[in-house]
Image 1 (cartoon, rainbow, N blue to C red):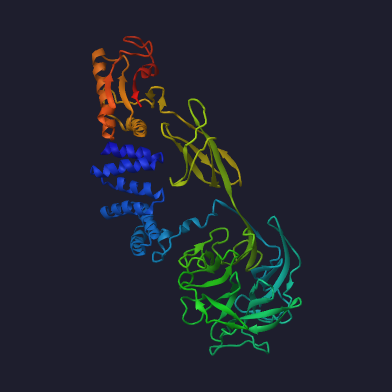
Image 2: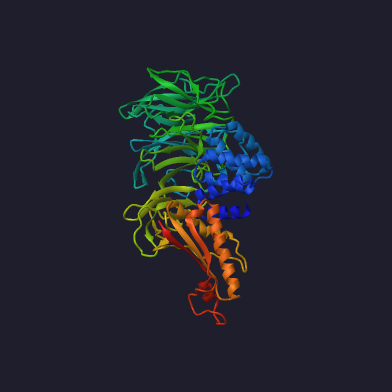
Length: 620
């Protein structure tokens, strides 16, 4: 069993997972249910994205052994998630948290989604994101971007002419501004910032966070609870809350300001966002009946200033913390900020596909969008490459600053041609796999008549390109991608033919001195013989084994004969019918290939040439 396991390990380490599965499962049938074998079987299936089978073998290991490596617990959790077995996953998440107390992956063990948060501080290797602090920022708070017809709308506390200051941060109250922006190849050119084109939107109190309808005729915005006399309204406790308003475009000015009917003096309502079809309005509120401190809600826009009753977006978005600054992109991706999930600190920006998939989970956007500070108010243009977000991270010009970004998928090409190593002829029908650093098969292609293959790969990653074809030995090439977008890497494959005229040709089979048992490295080579004979079920072979001249002639004859028969017995043990091996004969030192006969002084390399085995094809 140990030998079987070692052989399986050899294939596993060379990414031959199907063969490894066969050998590991045979080992299990023979009674080897060690932690090593069970978890390796799990990994074989896991790396092939077969989560059901992977869960089976990981589960067997976890139930049989008490001290399984926590990484296998984590993989088991992931497989259970993919199978919707949340109760089982959560049970093992608690176990994982007990063992890995400082591991961030266990911090939210009661959630239905598992993200590898420790990677959030690193930029996604396959995305090139350029971030710039915009020149329109000031030393005061500037945040909350929305672009319509090349006009960027944002909130700012830069109006120092206003005597009143907001006690929260001792800055002037916020006003809504706009500035013309032209984006060419990701580069922005700004005009001069000025107040939004409206005489009555900005007051001496807060205004911020706008959303504009597709036709450009209606704007929604947030404002303090200001009455008709431009005075703040308060609840019974003396607190003034935020409210949502809308205005219509008349000529070039926003006029006809109207308060939305679902506001209230006793809770805040703000941060408007529109669905792609403008039939829904999303907003943030701390109203009663919510899940956390502030939640995101939606209403249907019914026309004539009529709206449906507000609906909480539920636990797929909202938490016990703060959810704020919703935004819906042109492809209906929902973006928001939250401090209720395990992130990099304070508010982080998340995205979710819940609009098109009600079971979708939020995904942390990671760096550079998120930092250890507040990151919020995400907006992306229709080109899906450029946009804005706000942050109070270090290095800014003021309290909150607006950052522009340009995001491009960083991809590289790994390509090559598969050839016969002996003849250099192009090989069709070669199965080529792209395997990532963890051993997972990313993609598989098969070469056609031109022998060519091509993969699109992520930047800054390590890959193995593995080529396989019947009657050939595998070949593999290691490739390291870098951060140069669209760079190409050559990864030509040269497969050694296993059949040469009337022989199956493999690497030399080595035996320990004075022994004839089959070692693991010899088994690894002999599996090539197994594969060829399986591909050719009518093939009949004979085995010859030879030694060098050192040692007695008769002894070498017997030793080589034992080795030949051990080789035959191994092939039979792997399912090759006995009658398909006509003979297995040792010839000792009777057929030397060079001068190194008895008493002739030779190098070790010269002696090695004589220690060999042949596999002759008698019938195919």
